Image (cartoon, rainbow, N blue to C red; front, side, top):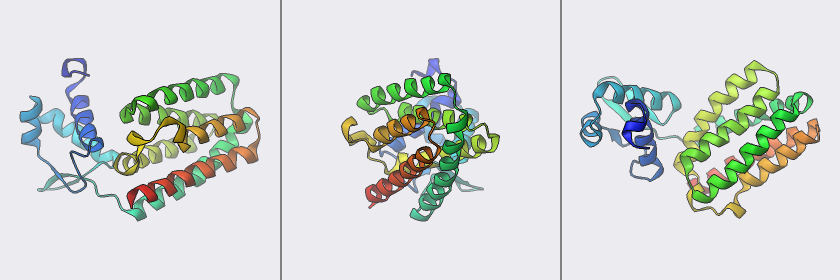
Length: 217
């Protein structure tokens, strides 16, 4: 989007994210506010708001008197995040098998169709947004507010690893394990089979972690 179509804070937020996706910014690089202001014509106040948002999501780290830097997520960070997410999503998906409505299943199918379309364009921004919606529909269907809260937070955190290490932009749709496993999860939910739902969610998170570890090497 052009700047005049977005709030300045949102523009800077996506501007920096795109530089990370394009590997124009690397882990450890400093974000220079003056340079951002010169490049975009945006004042320091919305720039700082965007940096704060990116720090909250884990893409940046900020230090007093030093500034903001592109995060340097470790293999241990990634392992811990996905182990926690695997446990939460497995149980949330199992619970969702008892409560999910036909309307929510239709919503998942619609999101799944969007994912396939976006994957073909290799638009990672949009794919991550749609992917987050997919997982949050399931968390909501668990009818457990704590699952919703913590799965949302973990999804945002895990996006950091996907942005840095996933080979989404060079992976053809037919080779995407994420798309295939989302199909399995939807089918298990449609069958209202709690064991299949639990196992599908475990497998999906483990596959993601295994692939990220492979891509990171």
